[in-house]
Length: 196
Image 1 (cartoon, rainbow, N blue to C red):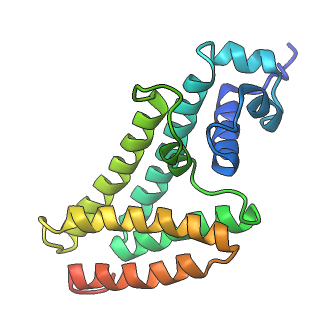
Image 2: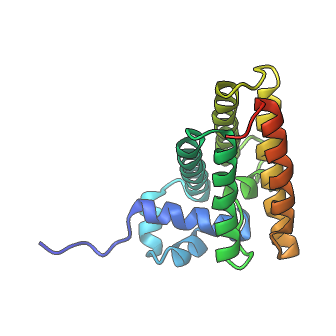
């Protein structure tokens, strides 16, 4: 039996997440996603009959879940280890793309939705950020942080890293991410009372 050469749905979703991380949501048309994922345009429409919003929503969920999986695994070793892994993930993406790619979740979050209603992709972005924060809160509390302060620190970590990624891309330097990393590590150690 001959093996199908059509790209998998997952490959198209991953390609969409990568393209959104580079160009933003508004510049990532279905045609551009198909080209970026090396997929026939027909396959892309077949897998995503609702069009760009469906594909963007799934791309954001894909990225959010991938990051959450890495974060969850690394947070088992403690909050500083989790932070370092979170930073290493983004450092790799930014540097390997020659400062062209960032976070697709952030990219969707900062663009104006096409309509006055809340887009599914924006909802998926909010859910991804909330999940990353939830994972951080859990590990901070498990390692001795004040349960009332942990949610604020988790939000600060996510917001700081996302902002530092954008700054690093703009400056074409990892200096902003490095500076943020130092400050966040100090805050985590202060919150839990000890390094990992």
